Image (tube, rainbow, N blue to C red; front, side, top):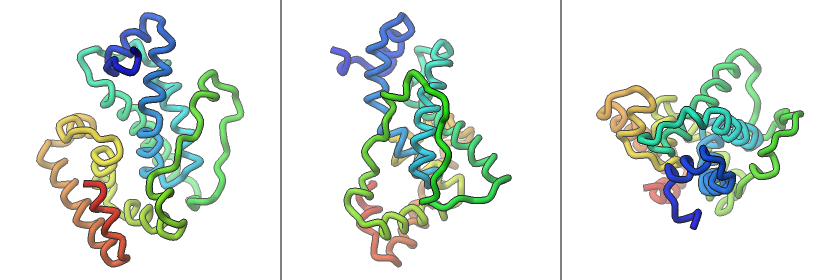
Length: 202
C-alpha cells in the first residue's frame, strides 16, 4: 500500500505521525539523492554524510512542506542547499582528493541506521576505477551552473521548469545550460573514448 502512494501523500501521512510513510520516502529517494550529491561534490564519504544531513533536515523542516508543492523539488532543494553550503566553506580550506577520507559524524542520529550508503553509482559497477575518475573529472570540469543543471536533470530527474524555479533562472537559460553541459561533456568524453556513457544518460 505504502509504495503506491505519491510522495506528497506520504508526506501528509508522515505529518500525521505515520513513521512508515517517512521510511517509504527514505527508501524511494535515498539512492537518487546520494547520486546527486556524489556527482556534485566528487566525494563518496561526503555524499554519505550529506545524505544523512538531508533527511535529518527533512525531519526538522517537515512542517514547512506545502502540499501543493512537488516533494521531489523540495527534497532536492534541501540537498542542493547543503551542497552549496559545503562548497562555500571548502573554498576556505585546502582541497581534498576524491579518495581522501573525510571526518564522519561523531554523534548518534536516529536516522543513522536507516540511511546507509546506497549502492554506488552505475558507472562504478560498469567501469574500473580509472574510468570512473575520468567521468567524475569531466563532470567536475563543467561550469558550475552547467554542472548543477546537468545533475538536477540527469541525476535527480527533475523537469526543466522545476529546475528553473529551484535555481532562480529563466527556463530558456536553464535549457541553454543543459545544452552546453552536454556539448562540453561530449567533447571531453569523446576524446577519452567514453561517449557511450553520455549517450546512456539521454
